[in-house]
Length: 230
Image (cartoon, rainbow, N blue to C red; front, side, top):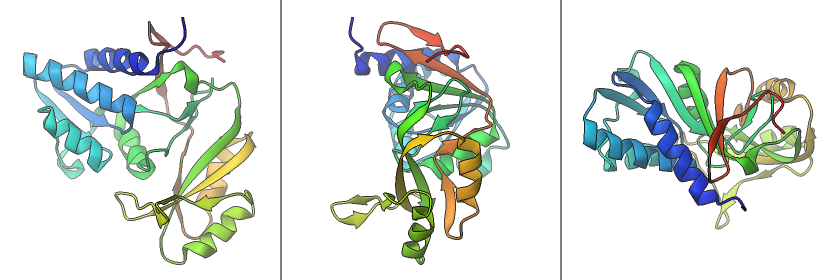
């Protein structure tokens, strides 16, 4: 049976909502799969009314969480996070993630870094044996952004500022985004470190070095990604 992306998101959302225990300090990422998680968790929370504190990595996720009745706290009000639930644009067998399609990569990294456990939800289309024909988002300061873009172009000549209706996309943190499409990303951690050293670069969509539990759905079942999962 062909993959049903919407069914995959729903199954992942329901699965992840079931993993949240009473008393959890929860970090919520962003994206359409996370939206399904928020909706499922909201339905469970309204039924059971257990103790919960949520921190959201984007304004859109915070608004959606509040709309379904979840208690959203400012990040400075929560000392630690027990669990972060997020999605990814791509993931490889080593658990390296490519994120940032939804423009929340800076806050998503902060939320994930604060959590004791990270649960990553993806449908099976997001699995990659190698990062080939991949676009790496890079968050940059608006100040002198053309100079920063020129530096990124030293690595990726096709890199361009992300725009919407001709205007630069602005993140919740007031940053611009550069999208860098490359044929192959062979050493993600090293590339992330190189990009972070460039003046004007704030963060990248390469998430390497995190201990993550990646859960995958094909629309019918949810399973844990094995270390040799293609």
